[in-house]
Amino acid sequence: MAELTQAEVYSPRSMQVWRALLNWLAFFFQIFAQIIRAVGQYPLLSSSSSSSSSSSSTTSSSPHRFKPLPVDDSTEIESPATVEIAAVLDSSVLADEDSVEKLTVVLDLDETLVCAYETSSLPPALRNQATDAGLKWFELECVSSDKEFEGKPKINYVTVFERPGLQEFLNQLSEFAELVLFTAGLEGYARPLVDRIDAENRFSLRLYRPSTISTEYREHVKDLSCLSKDLCRTVIVDNNPFSFLLQPLNGIPCIPFSAGQPHDTQLLDVLLPLLKHLSQQKDVRSVLYERFRMPEWFQKQGIPASGWSV
Image (cartoon, rainbow, N blue to C red; front, top):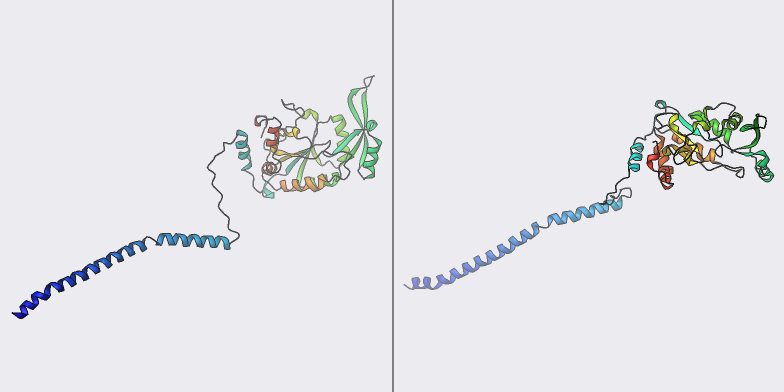
């Protein structure tokens, strides 16, 4: 009876102990579960930060890695001229010398290859300065379009100065290009002059003022389409840019030459290297556009793209 009473007395206390233990276990389990959930949220963040740090360290350690370009959400509407130019420029690639025709180089005459003065009006000081500096020169009799009183052709006497390096320029250029002379001068003046500077007949074709055309913007314009329909391998060198306003992507504007520039080096130091480079191109217009931006220049002069013949 005593044992039964003792069991009845101690049983409630043991049950309380077990409940307390279960409550503590449940409490620790909840904490543990929260820790697991919290830890499970961090791997993406840590891997992202580690990958970003590793990529940044890679970028900093590799000086040749390109940085991405910034994204510009604004879009510019191209003008018709820009679209037309882009269509031409996309076709320019390095050419195989054996698979393309020779480069055609169209050369202006006055103030590009030579400069000429009426002998009677040439200042003696200018003549002496040019000759003392070593400029090559000669005097020429030219038939004028004017008539004498008796109906005979008038003869003009002209002093011509060759641009420094002219003969070497023509010799080297004729090795890799077909040469065409295109001048706005009259044939009676230009033909005997060209006979003197090109005794070797390096020019395959000579064109004079009658071959030029008049446009609503300028007169004596040299339309290259008379030479070829495909102008990807044709270039014109002229001191007057308006001469090639119909084909601005084919033009090279050169510095005008005068007898007061005896130490000019444009032909051999500037033009010849450029023309050699162009001779290796399938389409010269992309190179010339990147270098001179002549279409934009003509637009600034008030000549729209509709006036071109690309």
